[in-house]
Length: 165
Figure 1: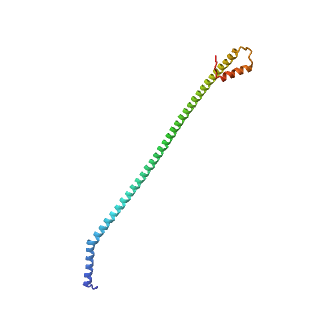
Figure 2: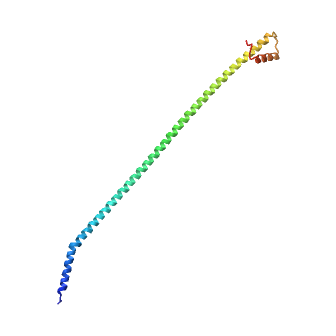
Figure 3: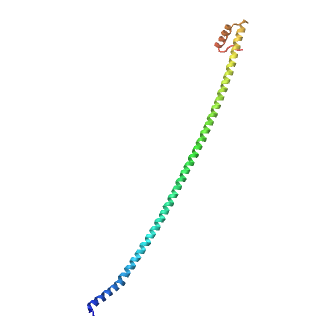
């Protein structure tokens, strides 16, 4: 049969005992430690993915709110611009109406002044003519030539209307 040496057998027993002890003392705790570390890393990675997804959701939400605020701001600016344009048109229309009213009033006033001037001119002309006629009649000459009327009118005008009736 096979001859087994005691040293060899002692080496095998030592090896098996050392392997068992190393397994109990080092391998299982290290394996457990590595498993816990792997679990912790996996948990941290899962949490990081969740945080990243939540952050991306918040970014999307804030971008949506920002776009909504920008649209609202644009709408308000547009509305204010339209209100400003409407107010401007209203003010311009009032100014045009006021200018038209002033022009009409000025035109009516100018017409009134012109009529009064014509009436005064006519009255003055009648007065001057009457004065000239009175002067001609005072001279006692009934047959009056055009030249005498012109001469008498010229005298009355030169005298500034003195001798009116």
